Image 1 (tube, helix red, strand yellow):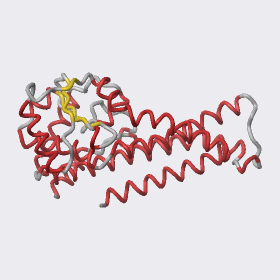
Image 2 (tube, rainbow, N blue to C red):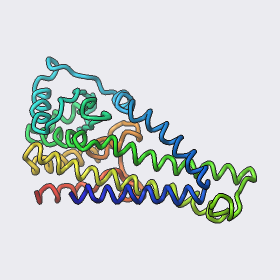
Image 3 (tube, one colour):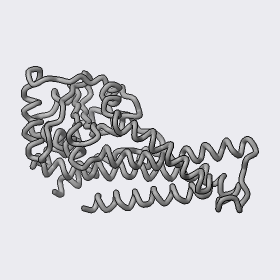
Image 4 (tube, rainbow, N blue to C red):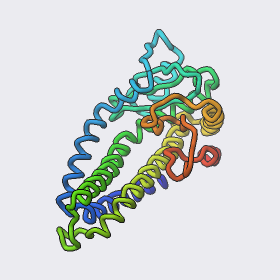
Length: 280
């Protein structure tokens, strides 16, 4: 419940940033245009992001005959979660990892790397799959799409304001209730930065929630905690070759961290995830 409330508060904060930035950067007209543009792009992403993510990751669908044990495990866990069985995909990568995608439970898919199947025992594998089913059950793709719409609209407004000022179209303080040149300059820098930070925080909150949901589905919180420890260790030693745009989908970050990694990371710290699971 705590993570649900936190997500709601973060979404409210993102909406507030959007409203303030819209008024400062483009007035009501600019805010409306940016929102419509972002909605259009993210509507397309919402409907087709699963196909794009699976293609970019090099995943291929595996049949029941190809991997009967994996299919059986997904079937049992989906039944426990009260979900339709998602499609099952395999990624030929030695680094162990997994992700789920799909706009709703009826159009969902779970993808695992070959390395995941090689290093985890059955209980740990159940924990990872249950985590991914937790994302599906919690409709995290929809929530991520809404957050992306808001953050995208803020970025569009900042870009529009930049080009407007560049070509001498800066507004005065009184135009359309905007914040004038000073407000526009501040918002061009602060609004997209703030929106990105909030969007990343929403992603981290959903990971915590998927951990808790997955633990309830599989019934073994410590198995999921053990799997996370293994996956983190392997992914640090051998980062995956993935498109950065898809990194947030994986159960652990497949890329190496950099400057300000914690603030802008889409994944919470592994040790904190393990601590929370162990507490369950």
